[in-house]
Image (tube, rainbow, N blue to C red):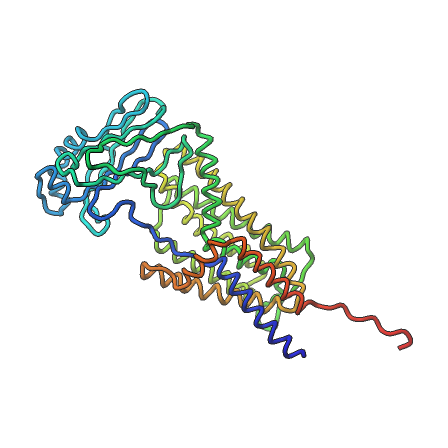
Amino acid sequence: MIPVLARRSRALIVLAALLAAAVLVILPAQRASAHPVGTTGVFVTVQSDAVDVEMQIQKAGFVAATGYDIPTDQSALDAISANLMSFILHRVSVADSASTLSPEVSQQPEFRTVNGEDAIVTTIRFSAGRPITGKVTLHDDFIIDVVPGHQVYVALVSDWDNGQVAEGDPQVIGVLGGGVTDITLERTEQTPLHGFLSVVWLGMLHIAEGTDHLLFLSTLLIVAPSLAVRARRGFRWTQPIPLRRTILRATLVITSFTVGHLITLALVSLGVVSFPTKPVEVLVAVSIMVAAIHAVRPLLPRGELLIAGGFGLVHGTAFATTILDLNLGLGERLVAILGFNIGVELAQLCAAILVLPLLIWLSHARAYPAFRVTVAILAILAAVCWIVAIGTDGETVLQPVFDAVARFPIASYLVLVAVVGVLWLFTRRRAAAPAALGE
């Protein structure tokens, strides 16, 4: 009977580990094109006192509209830059409910590859000299006045005062062409509080959907009910430990992670430092691997605090990408850093409240060491898959599993609770039976 129970325990441990990994493993982010190939993209950012309009002009459309058939060479583009911008400024305008805004070129035209095609990218700032009020209307008949079949996809990057802040690709709000040259942003509620609340929610979503950060945190929390003690070679984990001490260890891990990512979140968001994206993504995966190795065997006593704080700096750099993509002004960016961090911490707290009681519960069963090691090994494998996906600009092979779990988060969590309960039931430590009277 005992060997059968042992086999069942091992099977259940693997099942629980697979579920935990499925819930927590990182999904490599894929940025879709904001507009289809063969079209022009216009990206609108509504600031407190100005509207930024970035134009991604397909070269073929530019040639058809202007007659300038120039080579794809920056020096050739620079030579006609003044004429080009004058041409555009006569065909693109922005107005709010009070008046037409004054245009100024904030980024000179440059060649870029967009959707695999040559494109001319430039940014125009339409300033009001006062707060932007009411609805915002964009007029654009550049190219489509000459090529009626051409389409201009207009996307909103952010509108802070109206609470429109989203992570990832800008939201397409309309298409110009076929005689349509105007698009209006209806701004019903304009107050900075809406922007702050939206970015708090954005921070929560970033953690809820950013399973790389959740996996890193979870591989650190999984050792909270354990204590590193000296062994013949290095250290080993022992558990369970008192409840109060477990909660203190978990709190210190979360605090250390918070301090680490807050530092780089602020520095990168404010433009003090910058780092290339891919190495940061790889380091996030490496952080998961290091935390998982520590979960298998302690690297040093309280090593999870150093790992959380040190690699928290890396995760903060990844967080900052979200703030930078919003294209906010300095004042709004400072508020966004605060709000986003609050959202991140709220999401982390929710995750800890959901996961930590299960870990504490299972730490009182014989299955916990094997459970911890199995989850750690699967986390390492998942991180390796993620690194491969980053290197190949593709998706991790585990993507379908993650998508399925993401669609049914409540059901997935309930299954995890059930699995932990079964593991505890079959492998819990039983109190020694009292000796019979008279023995």
